Every structure is written in C-alpha cells, then in structure tokens.
Image (tube, rainbow, N blue to C red; front, side, top):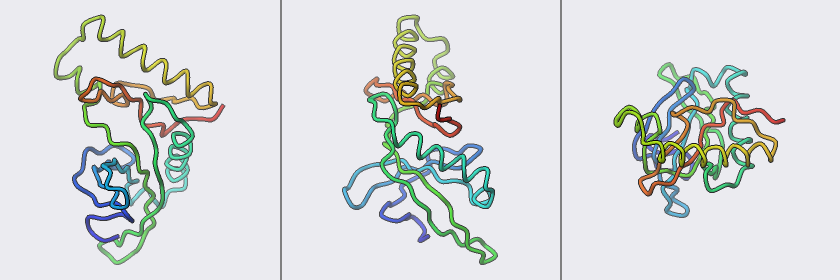
Length: 166
C-alpha cells in the first residue's frame, strides 16, 4: 500500500475508528467521486473470525439498494507492510460518503431531540430495516452510532458488520 492510496482510491483524512477498523474519507480517482473507505485493523486481518465478519459486512450491505442504507460500491484487499517488514492483506470496503454526523453525535451535542424529529428518524430507520429484512438481512447492531444524519437532513443506516442472513 502506498501511503495515501488504496487501489484507485486517494485517502483524504480519517473520519473515525472503531473496534474493527478505521473509516477514511477518500476520492475514487476513476470517477472523481468522494467515498468512505472502511479498513480492517491490520492486527485483526490475521484473525479468521474478524475477516469473516468484515467480509460478511461487505456482502450484506452490497446487496441492499435503499435510499436510507449507505451504499457499498466496492471491496477488496490491500497489502500493508508492517514496521517489522511483514506483509499482511488488509480488507477494505468502499462506501457512499455521507456528509453529516451520527445520530449519537447529534444527541450528544443537542440532548433529547424534539418528538417530531425523533419520530421522523425512527420511521426512516425502521423503513430501512424493513427493507433489509425483506431481503433476508438482519442488521443486529442498530444504535445511534450506526445511523448517519446528513447535512441535507437525509438519514442513512450503516455498519452491517454483524448482520446475518435469514
């Protein structure tokens, strides 16, 4: 992996990190489109359980096409050379970039939301989950940190990392 790039994607900045990996803002240089790239942490890339979970997320979300579910565009593996010289294949998922904040961030900043806004968000999330259920996918980790509220007010469910096919 060349610093700052993953395949056809130029990394711009890290957006966040979690237990499984980090998410970066990037640009798809083939189509000049802003994307988000989720990469598995290199130390977890050797663990078959985490690899299976990460791949399951890519497969689960890639099959869903709904306005309120973050779209998955691509996935793959990149070679990372660690400080000791060892090389490890690190999987990544390329997703729709959502310019906004998680519902968790919004609640932390603003406190309780007005009932009408909370109801609107709940309805959109439930519609997205109903769609995924009709397509045989159960999210299994729905929480405010996995719901994005875009700058334009649209709502997106993300992170199907522990989803299961029914």
